Image (cartoon, rainbow, N blue to C red):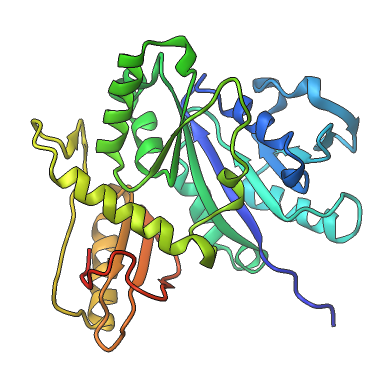
Length: 314
């Protein structure tokens, strides 16, 4: 029997039309540490990567100058991913340790995450990494206010990348940052350095990596406290999207919590765009982290200790 490989980390890059998703992806793939990456996009014709193609493997798969594999979704996502994986296993394409799925500008990332987590074959070989949403300064606020898809892309993000800050004023950037922090206070927001190189950690560090879990959760709780003390008009409300925090000081019985969460998701799954929580479980000295997107709840994660020393469900 062959030894099972570690699951391949699947990241999703999303963002509204013209936000700069492909530009960010091209710059990331130029980093040597990300050379063993496979990329799935919708159509080559809709993105500006043609000038990077150096070798055609077939109609579906090409190699980039960076060494990364790139392919298109021809039928459906599951079939595309499994086909790419099988070709790697047969030695027809070079091995890759991470996958990046770039959505169209009008896509909701939730169905992609559901596909990766619900299918048994995909779950065996892949694990979900980050949802990275790109928002550009010149058009970001308008797109979020006008298009529900843009607002959803922000709400489900683990990381939000602000692009094209060099094309707008400092006040426009500050206004966008405030809007994003109110819509998704648990997400990490980074302003892209247009003159420098994007950080490799965007794709290399995920909530599922033990080394970054505590830091990520600490950032959630810090964002929650900072958000709580913002007394501007309706600081938790943006259009049809509202953020709120449920807190409980007493320990919670896991079976009861799991039942409550199951009922909540069953009744309102698609309305719950993003869920992140630190749970104080009865009988456990350390917290359990839960997080999900709409009807998809990721496998709970255990932390070694409470990141801020406060033993409380949030």
